[in-house]
Image (cartoon, rainbow, N blue to C red; front, top):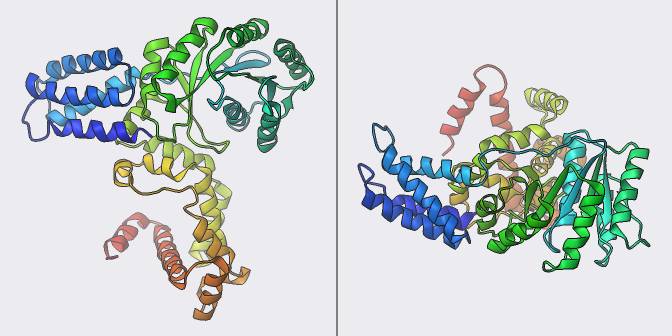
Length: 443
């Protein structure tokens, strides 16, 4: 996420390293590189120019009685300005209304239908809502089927009228159905086109007038950069939508849409899509995104995701097993499954301060645990519960069964033993100190 922009901003700040103070000359040189980085990220020229102008004014003005060195000072100012550029504060969705009506809009291929499912899943699991998905794309082949597949995947009902070609009537009927069947949130998926046209804009405008939604969200593919911003403006002129959804932020996005869209349409980014899984949806926090762009990570979001997957009862059971040296590979598999539910490995690593830079050339495949799981699944139930029972001959069988080498099995066994020792060290008072001493001895 924003790797190229992060790298270029980091290089820009290097210009100030070694300087004792900020001057108009060295800050101008740094901001020239910052502006170039923004333009390369497909940020609108006027926005990039005004952005660097504000930073220069603040940097020169703040260069008095400060304990920060010039590079640190500029990073702080850039972070504050990036946060402001992307909206300043988090804006949630309006869930008032019985039922709450949310209208999805956007071009074809932006990820609108998939995001409708992600939003339904988010509201169902995190807001205790009873959502109904509505299929109002009556043109794209298999659009209704796609939404039905998504609905089945997340356990959310989908309302559709396959023979009806009037999306306004379908939307109104769906709201009536929701009221009669105890659904308190209606998410309407509408048709998109490959480009903006009068027919599409008239249709979605008619749906908007007919259902009077509490929220109209514009879904945009973040990889389309400045084109996404121009499209958002055209939609906002017709719909006056409440917020923006940026999809495909896990891809090789340049970041221009995220950085420009608030300035152009004056509407907040409310959600971002960070992967293909139905759980890959995040509320948009401008300050956290600014941290990630500047390579500072996003530990708060990482902790929040971990807490969502944390099972207190399961943690107690594992704690008892660790204390009795009964922690086995089945327990290890459960831990892996919890980590996988937190999101893509690439996204999780990007939340660790400095890790994005260190791991930028490493292929962070979502199947990173596949080899480990294959080895564990090739073990018998007794071998999983009693790892010490795995002899050399058994390792040979496990390697063959999992399509891996004996070295891979040995490496997993070694890592598992070290992890078990660390977890044992963490038990009881002074656990963290003991673990740090142990880590210090592992050379």
